[in-house]
Length: 126
Image (cartoon, rainbow, N blue to C red; front, top):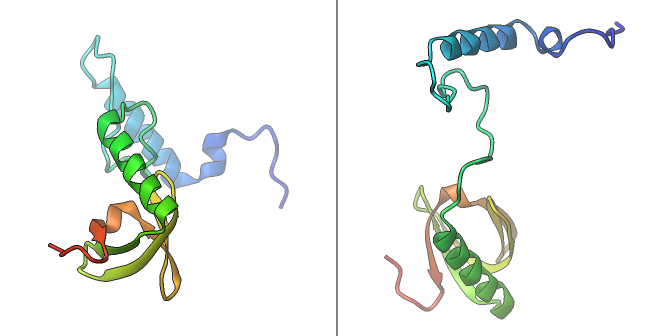
């Protein structure tokens, strides 16, 4: 099946996406006049995108980056306690905005959103 290049993006997305766009358009039309910001209700959003346009809390961001950088450089053995109570032990190899990579018995990539807290291996946990 050959798709025409003149076909609009809405047509290529399918009926669910078209319904979502239509609902969003109706919701925007009902927004108070003069309101400069309109946020899509989460029920209409197809997926969550990164915090584009939102101001990060810089003091917390810098503290987190500094702490993780220090642990990576020193190869400090860490204990990472996840939201479900699981404990992961190892050294942090690298990190980015959303995840950290830990090298312990195995190498594991952990999303930051699933971390409850972390501490150095010798320190008492909470």
